Amino acid sequence: MDHLSIRDEIGALIKSQKNHEYFTEVNKNWWKPVIQKIEERFIKKQCHTNSLHWGWLRLKEPQHLLRLVDPSEKYIEYFVGDDRLWFIVEDYKDKMWLYEGDTNFIIKKVIPQLMHLREYYLVSKKYEWLLCVSHHDIVYGTGFEVVNKMKQFEQENSEEIIRD
Image (cartoon, rainbow, N blue to C red; front, side, top):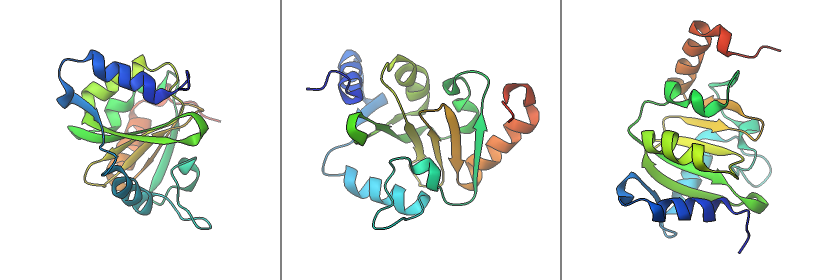
């Protein structure tokens, strides 16, 4: 067992919760088609793969990115309106783990408690949009709904944006 595994952290968090309907790991029999659909919908294919690893570099249009003044988890709720979503985390050796759950629970209870969280994706369960927070804490979005929310946030909150 790798002591830096984000999956182990999330597993411990899930076990500590009394109600698993808020957040759960996706069954191993179901994760592959979900990941494939996400990759096909949102990631430009390069060579033989369209993997989510560093997928934020290959997002399909429309896309937008924001560098924010404070840590990204402070802002995610502005961009995400769905009640439930897919939550994908990158683990040690670029392994991806897929979870599903209540959006508010993920944003307010899961993400802030994870010490080894590097890159993660929040994805509409209807596959309408994808939001990624990279290991640089830059927020990337694709899909009209999330891109429009990000652009609106940027226009209305310029003091929260880091400009190059």
